[in-house]
Length: 73
Image 1 (tube, rainbow, N blue to C red):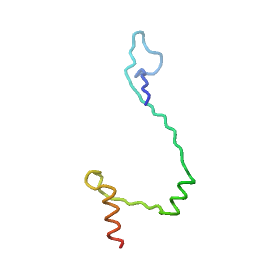
Image 2 (image 1 turned 30 degrees about the horizontal axis):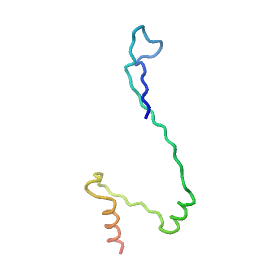
Image 3 (image 1 turned 90 degrees about the horizontal axis):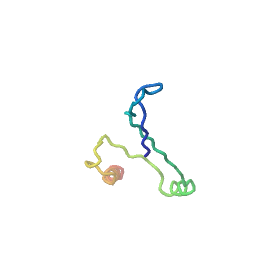
Image 4 (image 1 turned 180 degrees about the vertical axis):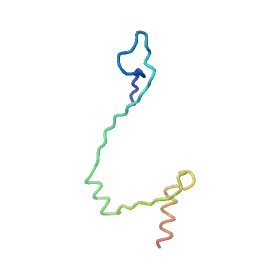
């Protein structure tokens, strides 16, 4: 994360003006491993499990999967 300070007004700042706005930028490098992805997709398949519960502490991913499996079988 990179912090950038800037003036809050447009144009040339007045003498003695202070940079009073702080902005942040993030630089990311995203890579993929497509051969591995396709290999895993053939073996396991990919599916989405969704819930209305937004609190991660209330319902863990593993519990969602177990509940899904319980209803399917």
